[in-house]
Length: 266
Image (tube, rainbow, N blue to C red; front, side, top):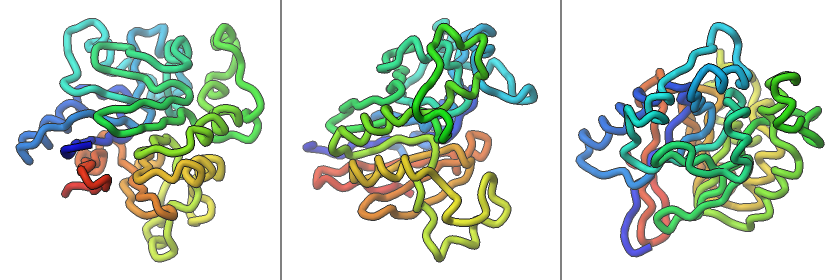
């Protein structure tokens, strides 16, 4: 890299694409700087229509078509290249037609179940899904998505974890679920009332941590917990983003500099 690159990272969008675009636009106008590309950490929910929505694992009260259909049909557009992974609430009936990833709408790229891409000189690796011990060995084939429990498609397999770890190195690792060890001891008090866990040792996945330890990225980003958090995991900076409804907490903007460092901008 001969110049700096601005990378925005967005938390769980849950289909609110217009809100994501507004958040990114607002940052650019406020800082008078251009975002080169966007990474999104899963629970993107790119539903084109009701048939896609029917293949997502979602509680009934959160089952909403969202805004992606407008981008799919050309009524709205993404101003920046968007690269996203799958979370645990995705229309996998749609996304699993692209297991290795691909462009699913203009300027919008799915990284696949496991993916590696180089953007603006930065090496990015993504691992979709979350951990379930019962699902590590097997996931139903896509043709069975209408007859199987939808949540079975929201988990990564051991083979996918090993593939992500085999890439050797990267600059940015994109996860949905946090890796184990993301809570530092002095941050324990921040866990009070947090969803899904109340002890540092209960937060995050050991397998996601294995990928972090194998790739040793400069930056690891994640979502899932709907909580903005910053810490370190060994040599890697860790940044978790909030839910899109939290506004600024759902966004992190980072500068990859010519000296190889990646720093978060205020």
